[in-house]
Amino acid sequence: MSFRRIRILVLFGLLAMVALVHFGEQFLVRSWRAPLQVAIVPINGDDSEAVADYIRQLNEEKFAEINTFLEKQAGRYGLKLNNALDMKLAPEAHEIPPAPPYGGNGLQVAWWSLKLRIWAWRQEKTGFLPHPAKVRIFLIYHDVATDKALDHSLGLQKGLVGVVHVFASEAQRQQNNVVIAHELLHTLGATDKYDPATSLPIHPIGYAEPDKQPLHPQYEAEIMAGRTAKTAEYAEMPKSLDKCVIGPDTAHEINFSGAFTSQFLR
Ligand SMILES: [Zn+2]
Image (cartoon, rainbow, N blue to C red):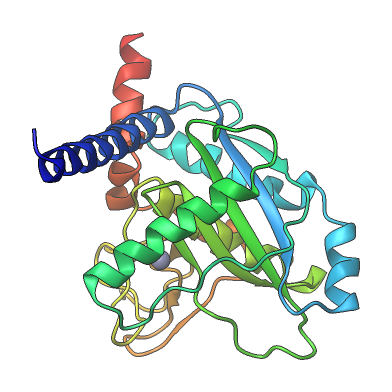
């Protein structure tokens, strides 16, 4: 066999392995049979003392409402979850993850996504192999006093990695949890339900009450739309997860309905 053929075979084998791992992971994380393992990794986004102080006082309790939100929303689809999430606050990471290539082509995005997954894997200092089916959410904290606009947050289904930009402030904590929940659901396969051109929720899939008369104002947000449509032209960010729901399309994407069927049949 020529060297070229061997090289192609090895590459093909690697790709097949990555695809297999991805399908296995997605099957595991979306089965909702056991609490989904989530590692929260804080990062000081602007190397400030204020952010360092904020990170020091973090604990799992600060993120507990994400778990409550998922359990409550699963219940709306007949799925009974005891501890939807097993969230662990990991030690602070001291490196900023590779930035996404905005406006980059498909190849650049694929390369960056691979780099991000390798980066995320390297942050795991507990062993040589990454834990299977664990979502890692990197929380990049910024000082409210100096940073006015945050970079875009993202959640990658492939690799189960989320990079979330948040404010290091107790007043912002509940709204941070809305963003974290949104990106966490991306890693489980949920898609955005807002119009990228206007950032407005898409009707009906991005509305909490798509059949409400009159339609506006909406009082709650569909989590993957990320905003509550107050009028046809204006939407605002919900203050907390109490004001968010998981709509039927998102529920289907994250397999709440399939998990309910298997729970019922068990
Ligand atoms: Zn999104």
